[in-house]
Amino acid sequence: MIDYSTFTEDALESRLWDLRQDHADLDASIQALSLAPLPDLIVIGRLKRKKLALKDEIARIEDFLNPDIIA
Image (tube, rainbow, N blue to C red; front, side, top):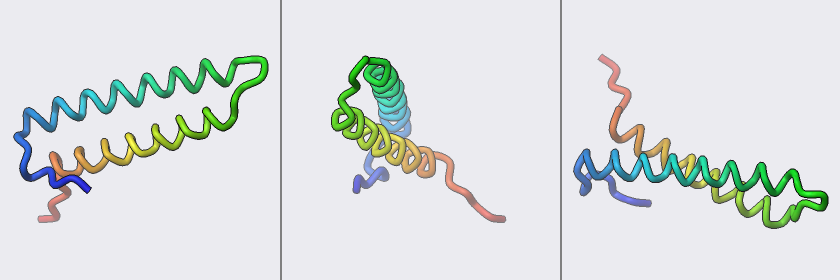
């Protein structure tokens, strides 16, 4: 796992933007492949796992940038 404390806030925001864009691109690819007459379920499964990994990293960065502090 990546140690986000070594990154600047601007670098993390940039990374977050890139990850969100990649996530959206994967979603579009999955949608397009799903509409094919004979969708390749193996490729779709791989893309979904990659999309989930991106979602997890997005959540970790968001949690690092906006920690839940109970007062």
